[in-house]
Length: 78
Image (cartoon, rainbow, N blue to C red; front, side, top):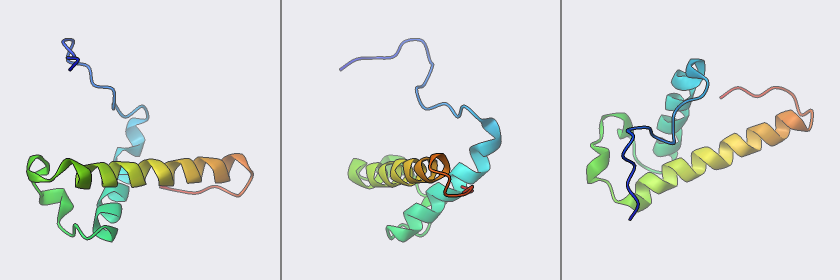
């Protein structure tokens, strides 16, 4: 397993102004997946599959939003 010794993470928010919207999206997706109290859950106690679902669905939704935006489908907010 590779280790990251420089304390930099690959999932930094590139647009800090989007942090609140991304957190809201994460909470909404977790709720849709049946994790109603996701923001207060200890994520370390969740199976990696559940955490992965939240991140995967976030990625899917963000890609859909970008595609709509690029195709001229109007502006979509997080």
